[in-house]
Length: 188
Image (cartoon, rainbow, N blue to C red; front, side, top):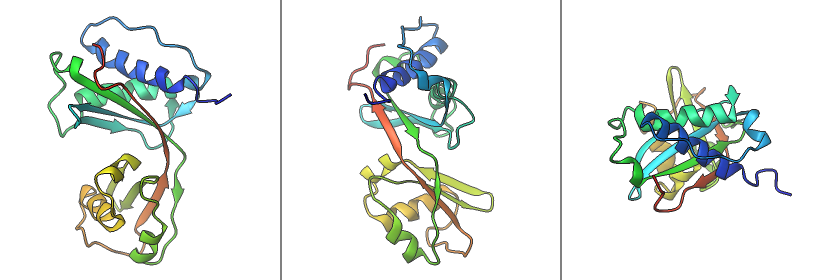
């Protein structure tokens, strides 16, 4: 039996309940799953008509999976600095996606070319860090940034660095995700 069977629906339900609760809507029943009580790191992504509406997450497991997904769902809906807080009128047309992150793996490289050669498009999520600059892209970002050099350049930009930035000591780690997405037209 697949140990993640039922986990995706539970995570989507918890994320939806966390946001709906902020609008005073009653919680729906969510199936219990043993993994919900284990430490986990998630990202919750909200979309409307295929366009990003919010995305917030955790890179390291520091609380239970259930707590993490609920926290990140509320943060994606109401505290993503790129967007105004989600309005109740928008909620019925909002689609929820949950990504469960694997442990990170630091990459070792001596040049940008060596780093680019290690990237696995469509599979790797990346965390880039230099000093106080830090950013991540989920593996789903490969859907729009399909070329490794472009992916890395945009990740540098997101971290507040020039796209051509390169220094020895630049830190890059990768991770994978298991992801679950609601149907195209979720019910409110």
